[in-house]
Image 1 (tube, helix red, strand yellow):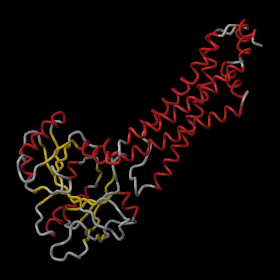
Image 2 (cartoon, helix red, strand yellow; image 1 turned 90 degrees about the vertical axis):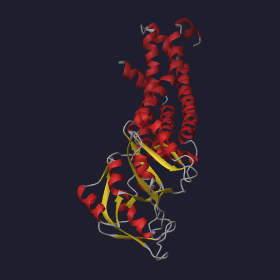
Image 3 (spheres, helix red, strand yellow; image 1 turned 60 degrees about the vertical axis):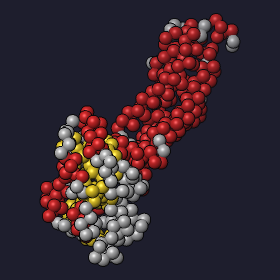
Image 4 (spheres, one colour; image 1 turned 45 degrees about the horizontal axis):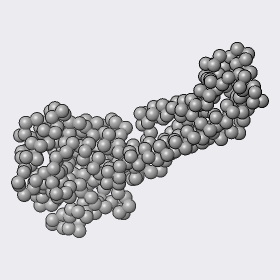
Length: 385
């Protein structure tokens, strides 16, 4: 009988117990997959952010606007490559439930700042030449069954036209962007900031600036220089890396990573106890058989690896089953929650972490019972029979 057949036969001795242990492990890894996708959904923007981009906002609050003249002043600071303005528009499309980000930007500067946005040259040219033009993400286009050329009415809430406050804003879809990176949101709408500025009667203000730097390692020094430029002015600034800026929003609902790790730690600790108890019980039930195997010439090392192999096989069966089911569930859930979490998927690094955890569960759960089997003395074991 080969070593693998021996391991398999031992697991089949108590088939129900083995199946239940596999299912317990599978449930743990299904939960791991779903929580991993949720963490990715809530912090994907943070992971995506470019290290060569800074965000400059009003020192008091992001809802406070900055003068439009700040952009040219920032571009004169050593180390700054470009600065481009952004304004959060808000607005309601048909129903308040139809929420999606609507942001006013300067087309050329914005697209140059974000090379991870895939927009065709034709659509870019149309956007730059159409005053009421807007580009939308592929997911947003699919969500509302829009097409390029459609005109989208949006009722203003934060911003209302000067000449007619009750008039609806109208945007023409001139392009559809897609993400070169899977973590990039495809559910936003970007339109021209000059359209907003003119309709507001030369607003002359922006929500925040995106600033690209020549050398990412000097980002902290450049951020300090930007804030120093506007210190003691009526509109002081607060500059941070784009990652820190996004992390601030994510942290408003708590430390997501810490919460998820705490949940998973409790789950895997429980599963370890279940798996370790299964293996310990299996070794106790087979004490005499292990002694007979040793008397027939099986070495202590072979006995150790037989018990450890049983534990690893249980963990692999349950863990890989759980990861597989979890992956399929994430795909299904992702479609259902796309309106709330545009980025909902299980990234490759989470899958790799899951496989490592599978091996870790098998090793830790079976190590102590395997060592007990390794140290088992033939005479002592047979005396218990």
